[in-house]
Length: 216
DNA sequence: AACTCGGGGCA
DNA sequence: TGCCCAGAGTT
Image (cartoon, rainbow, N blue to C red; front, side, top):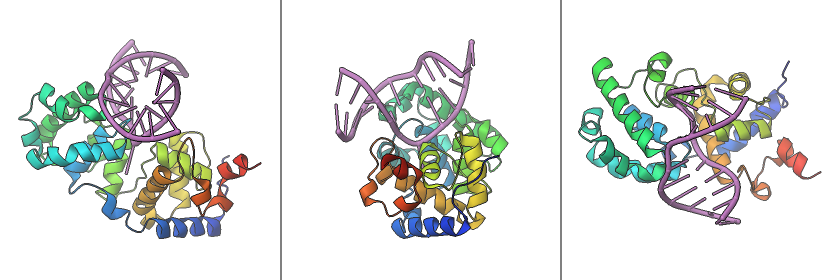
């Protein structure tokens, strides 16, 4: 049976410190509505969010809705999103998703996990991002940052994404799920990086299993 | 479980 | 040059 390494008080302290470190996490989310978040998150597969933001900003200026996106051909949309990588596949998926939104969901982004995952290019992680960030439902999106950071810090204790999500839902108060997700992602981007984490800048090393391993 | 899609940033 | 990035779909 898995056991989360940090006790409740330690977890509370870690979350408080993360909140202190990333007070503007909410405003750093570069989207204005569920549709923009959905498309941005599809684009984010194996691509940094910085580049996604660079691409989506001008794209949504001209094509802010599914019906507007659908005026583009697959090749045209592919050129818009080229720098995000996998652009042939993503262009096809986004157009198919927009088509489904228009046909089955009245041009809106559905709130149900099943309906979201039925959209081309939307898997479990993307669906969780939309559910937790836009609709405030019960989900924590475990992407590569969340997986790595939460297990290093001891908010989770697992070697796979599914169990990590379960751990996080147990170890973080529900009211903080959405915020904690953003804090952890920002921490993973800026400090707790995969390859060369900036542990000397991190105030959480006393809790961190990775730091303990590195320093012994 | 392994493989494919992929351009761009960074060391 | 080589490694890596808010993954998903297919076999």
